[in-house]
Structures are given as C-alpha cells and as structure tokens.
Image 1 (cartoon, rainbow, N blue to C red):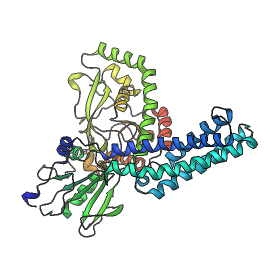
Image 2: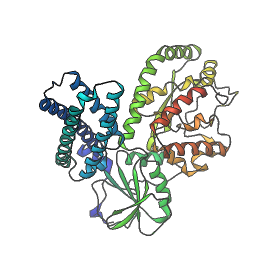
Image 3: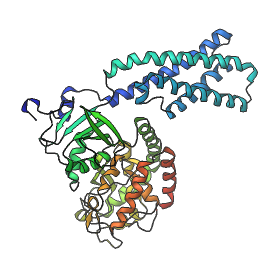
Length: 462
C-alpha cells in the first residue's frame, strides 16, 4: 500500500465532516413515507366524501378515517413497507403498500360487521375511499423516490473498509481504516482490543474486512458480534460459516454476519423497553429510595455500584446495580464470583441479591439505551468458567453481543444463573443466548418477561 494512498481514520473523518449517518437518513425517510401514506389514505376518505356527498366529520366519515389508516400502518410496519428494500425498489414499495391496504380493508369490513355498522350504506363510500386511497398511495410512493434519492445521494448505507493487510491496493471508500496503523488486531483474548475495534465499527451498516487468510476466522467472529453486515474479502473459498456473497472492487466477499435486527425491529424492541420501563420505574420509586437508604445506613460508600461490562457490538458500558458488598471488598472486574457464604456481602446486600432487587438500577441502563429489558446478560470482564475466561472457553462468546444486553434473558428463565463453576455452566448460557439471538421475535420478549416473574427469587441467587 503506497503512502499516497494512506488510509483515513473513519471515526475522525466522520467527526470532522459532521455528516448525518445514513441510518438516521433512512429513519427520517421511513417517517416521511409513513406520514405520506397516512395523508394518501385520508385524501381517499375526503375524495369519497366529496363524490358521495357526506361530510368527513359524519359517523360514516369517522368510521372510514379512523379505522382504515391505523390498520394500514400496523400491517405496513409488519410487512416491511418501511424498509431499505422499499427505498431501493419502487415496484416492491408499491407491492407491499397495496398488500397492507388490501388486508386492512378486509379487517375493517369485519370490524364494521361485528360492530353492527350498516354495511349497506357504507359499502360504496368504503369502496371509493379505499380505491381513492390506494391511488393516492401509489402516486405518493412513486413520487417519493425522487425525494429519497436527493437525500441519500446514491447510497443508503454507510460502509467501512477495514484493511488488515500490507498488500491492499484497491479503491478507498469514503470510510477506510488502516487496522495496523491504528494498532487494531482481532485478538479474541483481549476484551479491551475487541472494545476498541467495536468503537471503530459503531454506526456503520456494512463493514468489509480485507485481511490475510490466517486472520479471517478471528475477524469473522468479531463481525458476528458487531451488529453490522460484516463481510470478508474473498480471494479463494474458505469455511467461515458465510451467510451470503457480495462484491467489492472486483473481488467476491463472504457475508459472515448481519445485524440480528433491522431498523424496524430495533424500533419495536426499543418502544417495548420504554413502554415497560418508564411506568415500572415510577411504580418502584418508593422501593428504590428505601433500598438506597438501607444501604447507606448499613455501610459507608456509594449506593450504586458501577462496573464495566461488554455491551452491544462488544462495546463497553457501565452497568448499574445496588451495592451489595462492602466498598473495600468490591471487585471492579468481577474476577471472583459471589458464593453462598461470601464474606464481602452485607446483610442488606444478601437480601437484595436473593430477591434480585440489586438488579433494579439496570432499569436506568435500559432507559438511557445501554441495555434492553430482554437480551444476553452482560458479564464482568474478570468472570471465569472454571479457571478460564469466558472467551477462552468458547470463541462464540463474542457473537452473543450482537444485541443489547438484557436485565433478563432466555438463559435466565431456563435456570442458567449463578456462579459459572464449570465450563459447562457457560456453554449452557451461551447456547441459550445464541438461540435468542438467531430467533428474535417481539412476542418472545414478552413471554420471557412474563416467565422472569417466576424466577426472580431462585436457588442460585446469593
């Protein structure tokens, strides 16, 4: 690689140019498209009112205006009518929108029937409203493509090329990192290094790695846990558990990872977190204050214990818990797991640990976005399974961090809690975490939350 083609640090470049991320641009475009769809459906209702001479504020107009649009939006969100593929493909955009409109029309007719609305008087206005709304919808969606193209300027995703090779002489995308110049290595035994790499990848949709063969396995594991579409430039076939193929600079690339949740599903999960977390914090406020006072009365020191844990994309964050140990005996790295007769734990601490009350401050982690209600539990950096670090037991450990860590998770409701005395204890948790990661559904989060109530007090809590 020549000096004249020196690679640019993507993170510093992004700060200097102060460009809005393409992910943010996409979110704005989805919101604009949703509002445009709503306007189209309401215009269809207005058109029906004008043609058939009934006021929009009449009972009939209210039925049409208040039933169809909400149904359409729910179905459109569910079938991907606001997605990257829709922004790229006009035909697909229209197909999904009209499919959502058709199903919402059928559901609306059923609602009218069961609510005993006079179908004979609403049939023609309803038909005209739906047809008019569909026409406005089609016109609006085709017109929207011109606005969208002016916003994304030819690309809808942010790409990062990370070069970990001395012989790279290809094109340099806008965001490129020289891994060796930045002293970045795929060291699976170093949480600090994994965290540094994750910080560079943060905010990108697609990360492409150009590296020697012997480093491809390690880079692929890091990508799988980075919550991005990760690809390895392919010079000859290798077995890296690829999930697809792509192209970059005339080379085949192996797609070895995709973020487990698209933007739409991340929004659903975040909305669920906020809807549940804010009321719970308000309801539990007297308990939180009482526990804080008891901790302060028993021992000197801070009420909240903060500890660095591995979060989404393998980036570090400070987890919050009620302090349950004496200040002078707290373990910043978590290298010593709590035991049943642990002399470090206070009297109040023993009670709040047994009842999981010590975990409640993590609701504030959820509120600020570091954690989710449901996800893989974040582990302390010094945690051991037997005599080995978690990542030494199984390299797939880094993959579990593709989602935000959770207050509870699939592993917890299956009883995989407490100290990891043996390597099998970690393996059980890891299998459950990867199962959750690969099969996320909103209803599953809800079922895990409900099941968590049954295991708040458990035999392995001390």
